[in-house]
Length: 288
Ligand SMILES: [Zn+2]
Image (cartoon, rainbow, N blue to C red; front, side, top):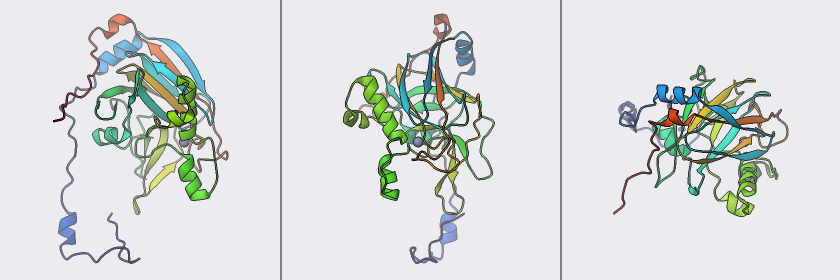
């Protein structure tokens, strides 16, 4: 499918060799075969030994923070109904290192599942979490080209909503995450807002339309009991917002959608199951 804006006058006329230019072969930008592989046996053995040490419920249209020590697992689940969550992650002791959805998307895909890593921003650029289990991994890509656990989009926010609709709405995920971080760290909302970053949209089903390549959402296939689970590759501070869009089947940034709580659990493995585990070091690149 090619974009053609000649008809509405916004594009110039195609050159005579347009077909040839468009026929160039796609090349994967980042071949990841040199990275450490996902070690199924290691994560499985550690997880089997783990016991739950934290249970937290995120109220609908709100966010909460949680801490996950390195070497522990955390699970996000829909225990009450289909609900999308917006996830931020920071290195617990240094908020300047946080999840980098853009590079994660380039290294893995537009949507994440078991075996994918959550990478941190530059200059750190290392996996800070690994997805170790995903009850929706069966979904893959549907006929609309959509997938689950999106890193294309970012959090819903009051600035875009105000720009598009002229309204002030205070429970967008951006605002929920800001308030949660401010509460957790005892800092002002103004300071907290500077740390809020592009999210992993947990359970969110999205894609780009085939004709106009616009970002779309559709009803999340998550049902009661669905979950996604992560391994903390460093000490993490997380913030999760139960999006005001609910299952994101129709609308967001309002109180119109049916919303449910989300559940966060932390599981701590037995120490000896981590004997072979090595934390990822921050990038070794040295600038001139
Ligand atoms: Zn949201």
